[in-house]
Image 1 (cartoon, helix red, strand yellow):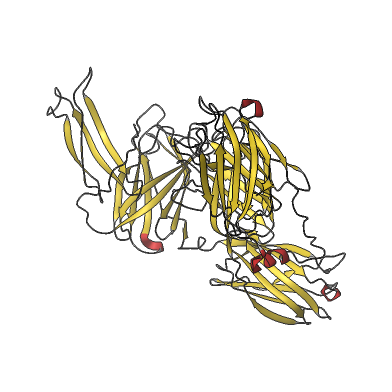
Image 2: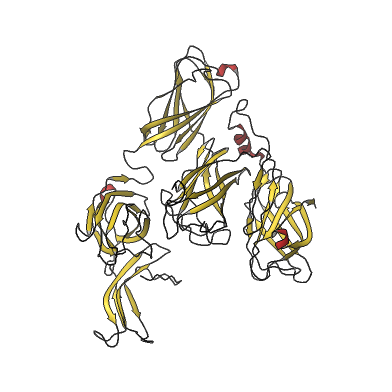
Length: 634
């Protein structure tokens, strides 16, 4: 099977295809089985069956034919689907045969339809994802009655073991799950298998009947009236789907509840509340007890709620608190792949950020202009150029992504990052992940330096990474290619949980004490012989409030030339306070990678504050392709 990609105008619903050849060359005769066309903009696909020769000396002698689509003649509304098929993990589970799907619905059927798979699909343990366009099959849970998977038994290794399948309506986000229970499809045991859905996820929710695990963090007040040694505390989380019911929170056995403390609890196997709208809380001690705030996180769905109590609870008193709406924030995520052999990955990567206030939920890491796809267990693969300008997650690559309109997780603690083991070379050796809250400039580094691979080390493809403590520690700020600069950043002192409620800093910043984002950066190339560079240029601003992270300056062919001044505006770059240094360099790529820099000028747009970073020197292989310049306020 050969796969091609080209740009063209949108022709709408695909009905006919004209295909042929010019009969040139030795062995021009061609037997075509079928053509599968997918519109990458809309997700619609069509199969054009042929099974005929294109040859002057065979059959009817035609070398050009008009083929009809499997959707031809259908003029009604359609539905776009994402179909995920998981191949079993037993030895030899993959297949070289052509795989076909049929979907039977309440109102219509679809297929048999050939799944257009690239070479290397349907291998052991792989998740293969396809776009389908069908007639409207029905509405609600009963829309999909059953699915049939099969193959044509062609190829040396045709036998196929199927583990499961998942069908998602791309508009409503409904999902149907099918358990194939590692069935073998071969000539002896049958080439097809039919399954009915065993689980259904309605629009915007978890599969029906899912039991959830909740994390509850309770913060007491700063004074002595927050101390409680005896009695019981109950909480009941409520949302649009229902409530958890009153759940008992055990009093710490040795100290009881102490002032200014955060106590965390895990509540297992409780009903899904959907959104978190209200919290009921009460206590049964003999004395009043002061509670500052409560955070509730549904760890199964990623939904979280923050509840400000800030009052005394009297004995046997139960009150109901409405959820506090926290402003959504954007996170910049930098992902560094190591320089080991075959360290890059072809798989789809996703991650979650965890903090004091909860989690962002699992988010796909996507390049600019990509469809968000599913944010569940199989996010869309980042195949386009990402914001670093290089292929995503390649060897020694530094990839930058922006997660927009996320729930603020507060002080970052951990990230969970992993991939779905798809593609030809899914194994990945990850160096580190760095996350910046673009609303307040807070940055956290999460080292890894391990394989995420089924065939390496502990065979894990997902890892939980702890934040590296930044008490004056050295943080790797490595550039994109061969050179490595090390810059020590002293972060502001952390807030002591024993004296201050854990959200107080966050709430103060939400009140408007954070400087406005937005910088203009001008690179002035020296007017000396061979001063210009054609290599990609990157920089990192370092201020009293932290770092901007490594940013690639997108250049046209004529930029960074001798004597030129090249200006870039970054409206969302977080406020960094007084700028101290800039780390600037090139990747060292190309024949003219050396660069002689005169100065770099930076302007904070909203305040009109300016800084000049003098250089008057070369950036080349001798300097590791990078220099760190000190600021001269201008």
